[in-house]
Image (cartoon, rainbow, N blue to C red; front, side, top):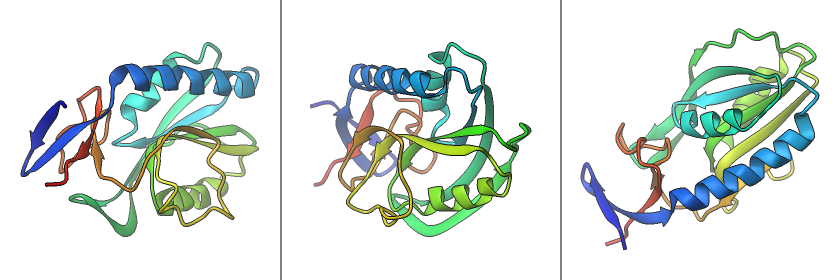
Length: 182
């Protein structure tokens, strides 16, 4: 099994680039079907979702806008439980628009809940959520929040690659790796 070291931790191959590309194509087909004539605004949650955003948007063959918001909730390999809005660079007019939030990973749901609250203030027509990775066993908002497009359901494991990092490193790997238990 392919492994790599990042800082002081060892990670093993978890989801290959080929598996990711196949699943993103499937998600894109669903999004196109739902939003082809709606000129959506894709909002990329930085930093982790930049690769996922690129792949989704380049497969969307209709008019759309892309914007970015930066939040932080991780310290090291675990969620801090606090969500901090670092930068809101949204320039698009969101009033009465279709918004698709693009996330790299959703675990407890605190980040997405805060984003939904913030974006609802703009009076959009509808907000949908797409995530590459979802951790259903730790998600706290099953009765409140619907995740519309899910790439992969995963266990509550720490992962890197494809935009996800460990203390700043690992985002550039095209496969996804999970923390190897020793």
